[in-house]
Length: 441
Image (cartoon, rainbow, N blue to C red):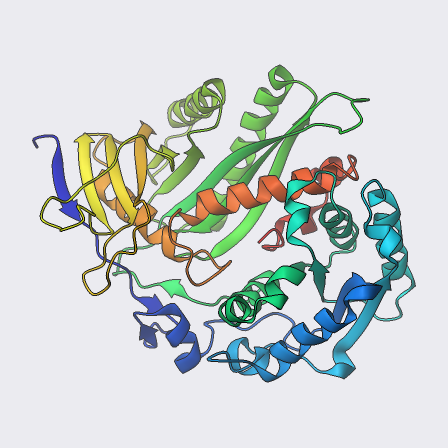
């Protein structure tokens, strides 16, 4: 094969039924027509609305939109099967002082106390917040999220700014309902595959959390996001909470080895095991993972081939199509630079839609290790591209594979919470319930 070479991966078809017969080429219209593939584990949840006492009207606006719908969104119950009514609601109105900078501990304690005193445990919480919170750490969001997570309550924040912008909110409300479904254990859709079994995909990441007071050293935490290449989320594993990187690396490889052992036993019908790491991981971290895979191959040869892919979302390469008036490459275009090095256009021109001037998104993929050299690299690239269409955070998310997108979200959520409650890192590592849902979306 000569390099570079160019080929094309087509968009996937989405599946909305267990037997695979209900399909659609559009995620949003597919749910409207067929309903989600699997309903939430709690279809009639008890909701907690958390908001500043001055934001009552915003909380009411969110509730009304979820109950009655707006624009093309028919309402939470009709769209994703999650009922919502006044009988299912419980407000948590907090004084303005709780949300002032420097009062994150007070806010955490207030939410925690409310949860302890509630006669009925909340199944899901909606938080009315501010878009400015993302610029601060510690933040009110981290304080609320930490209190909720320690009580096992998934949540979704909706900002006042979004609720004020009606034209934006009507496009966002389907994503809000979708996220609630996923966090409550539902499966919106999966990717249609051929008769070949899916791959087991593990997104590996690390996060460094610094104590804002400077009284303790930074903490390192590793995690593995486990899913199938058709988009089905399996679980999360956390390991390696340490105060130094030298202490962290052996804990990371030991924890990852245990995770692989567990998954190989539980997921026997997979075509391959594909581990994904981000370009932003330290070289010695990637090297340690590759060494672990090499040792596993020598110690216990597995009938299932496995590989390690390094994914660079912010690639310095740009793929251009000189046959297009704007030189924009079609999404799904693949440029093979070498046998183990390729570029994949995650977001680009579609044949039936005009490009709107954004920079196309090119993903750079390096295969760092493979247990069997005959394992198809093009099949791995197809799975990487299709994983861009199974991010259940929203309908328009496709610029990153879910493994990368989920890893970034998870790192941000852990850092937000640990900035207020540093001990939550140890809780996350030891409490298995934190690994059973997509609470970080």
